[in-house]
Image 1 (cartoon, rainbow, N blue to C red):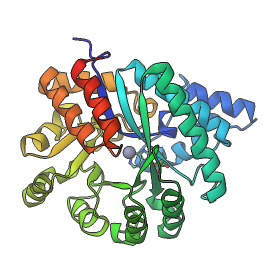
Image 2 (image 1 turned 90 degrees about the vertical axis):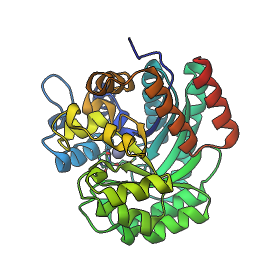
Image 3 (image 1 turned 90 degrees about the horizontal axis):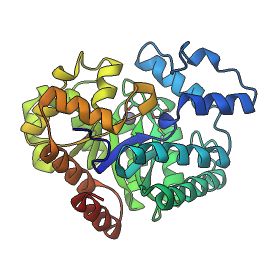
Image 4 (image 1 turned 30 degrees about the horizontal axis):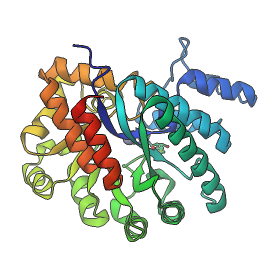
Length: 329
Ligand code: MCF
Ligand code: ZN
């Protein structure tokens, strides 16, 4: 079966990480910036390992320099997602890359991104909501400024706050102030954890940051007590299978723990993370899961229901998307 037109919900997508390499090369040319070293000969993004991936991501992002650049990026990313059947998506946005955490500048970038999202909704039938994301390896002080940007711009489009980046730097508790600030502003909370570090990273993230969703979480599958807690508390894992295999978290899709986690009662969802970086799409994620675990229509429908139930959107949007999922349109 071809999964491309199956309606899908995606909760974990980094906006700049969705930028097609040709789009970034085009902007680099327009702005006369030389970033040729971040591409392979065949034009894909080139990186050696996770830490290098983070720096290539930042180099690619350096050519996105204005609200207009982000408007174009948002349209390009959403057109691609919609072509893979995605009807609802949440994307990580970083004020670090949108005006250097200056609140007035951030408002302009956010307005351009939200405008593009509404245009894409009319043109391609995909609904997008935003999650402001602090970057762990930039440190707690910058995260506080990022949280203030988020708290000041909560609205129908900006729904969540999260953390991404290098989890080997610092501890989740270092970021508690930022998450408290975002929670008080009414934002939904998620944090990347346990992609590289062990299960204790999930424990600390739940205790210190009080999130309802974890980005990745996949290395927690070896800790039964923790998995019991995650299942009992209804914590949702935003699992990005192809990302994990491509970055080397697991050696193959067959060895990926997503099926084990689901069988142990964890609420799992599926996302692409940074699709062109990992040569993936939502269609490819479904194909890989079908091949590795024999998942089919019922499994994918259940994943999508878990995802829309955990989405940070308002109830009216949730009902509208549920309707599209069940009617298949
Ligand atoms: O999920 C992947 C891998 N793990 C951690 N972080 C990231 C991933 N993709 C992007 N990121 C980070 C990266 O530091 O998110 C930031 C990037 O700068 C952007 S958030 C809009
Ligand atoms: Zn991610």
